[in-house]
Image 1 (cartoon, rainbow, N blue to C red):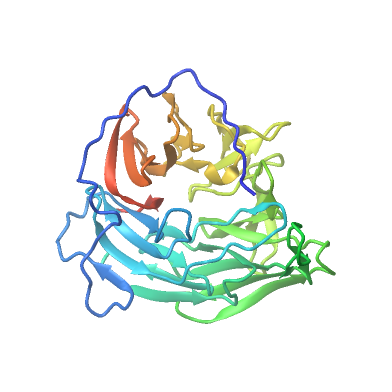
Image 2: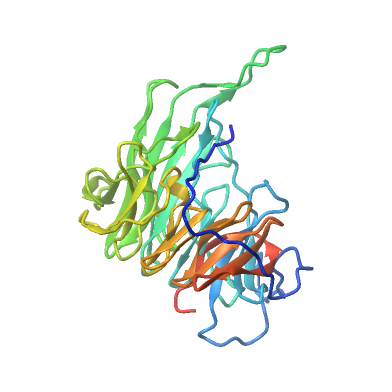
Length: 379
């Protein structure tokens, strides 16, 4: 079911769009194949080390599951890319599940998971290597994962949903679920073995398990969202965040006792969804101390993305920094931050683009279709 997102208007709005940048004739970020990297490719050009690079996901067509990850520059062309087996969203009757992105950036490049639970690392050079493998198939599974800052450890939560039962012939009833919910929390050494930390199973389709979904890493501690709703028909606030100990158990609550979220910065800053209606947003440190309260909407926790240094935040439509607030006019959608001054957008054409906080009416079209993942570190 399509999720309805109700966003409030702010005082300052965008009034015009100006296009700039590379021609829009290339529908997907393009690159030249690199030798010795099956499924991956890289540009032969030599680039300056300080060039802003970011990761994107690409799909064969709008509305389809992503099957390609790429490292791209602001000229709209890929420096490296790799294809992978697409995921399939699990089915829940009369509701929509909230999947984590397939890809996330790290110090060594961009990590991405395929529909069979294989996590790989795509480097700037174009090489793609297997980092970890977790037990799942594309059908009725949901996987969330986080990679340690040094790239040596991957923590993954794998939820197995009950089997889908088709409705009786000749009816318009929705499909139902039969069987048990199962959950497994696994820890893998990069390039090495995978071990199970925790297992849980329900006593039938009506009884739920409490998944532990990793969302990030702060210092030496993985952080996970514990017991968040599996699906929603409307609002989705994320779940309580906890550090996870070596045995896989939730340890210390992050962001305070009234904070729910779906992400955390490496610095420990959390975009908390708070308040009696669950729509206010409060940026807090890991101890729960208020850092600032931006005028953005917490209706959908997955849409809340923060600038790498925590100085800006967007909910998809509203963009706020400590000194500036403005609205992205629909149908444009803000997808994340390249840096503290640059917001990446999805344009009405499906292309990616970007704006600068100091000139938000100038929209730069990158000329290819995709979804923003994040800025590469030290690029």
